[in-house]
Length: 191
Image 1 (cartoon, rainbow, N blue to C red):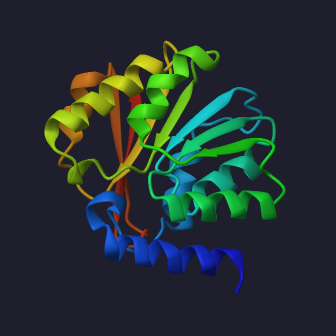
Image 2 (spheres, rainbow, N blue to C red):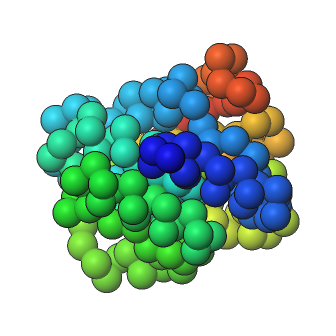
């Protein structure tokens, strides 16, 4: 079984067993991934923060697209974190992409002590499954770690949290991704 199908089955199982945590039963497809990483310049040399990596499909694509970037990603599900770590190692990318098996809020709280503010935070966390106070706390934590002018990129399967995101960032663009299954929206929120 190849790495991607191995990760797919783990994601399916995680989605069925912990649907509120995972938010889906299939990983993001290439159409959605391309929209999410498009704003990151190919020659970017800074650090990108990814929240909710799942099996690492976006992490792998971003690392290949931006060979000079460093990626710090978190995944709360320990099985998916291990699959992501294994996929990065197999692809020879584990020296530039680190997987932290913990909640996004915790990783973000530790960021200010660990280097320069990131220009990009990319998230696949299913905000619609979180209670509103937790969503607002997560959005505030993202805003607080981003560099001035930095970009928060979030995908969702609905527009439920659009106003919450708009309330935390100076500008917001919403992009539909019809070819993803299921169809999704990507938010580009500027600090």
